Image (cartoon, helix red, strand yellow):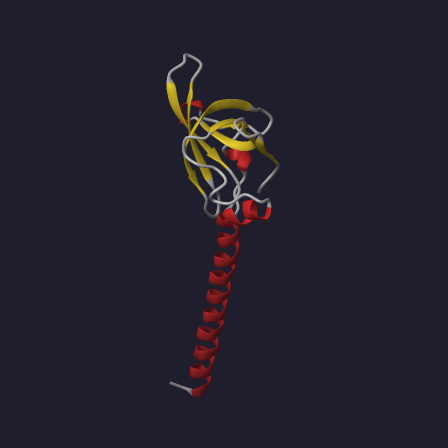
Length: 142
């Protein structure tokens, strides 16, 4: 092969490699941020609230979101398990909430944004009260 042709091939391969690297980098950067944050509006009705009064079954204090499981009666009085999405452990700790703040068996009253699928019995936390000692939280998280 001629030297000119060989140099041209090297430049073409190098150019394609750089373009491929740029595309992969862009995909990783934008794809990662898209997965790292989601819209609550896609899962919950942010313009509505629902109240659930029941007993705490489990408090999952973790990242990227903490969850409470609460057993509370539905509109017919049948006990149902509700899943309540809350802030990340790092966010909650800055607000004075630790993994020891809530315990299974605590009676709680939760107000939250209801999930878009009622059969899932999901809420996004807006406020929580523990009537036994008056402890309460009201705030926001992202």
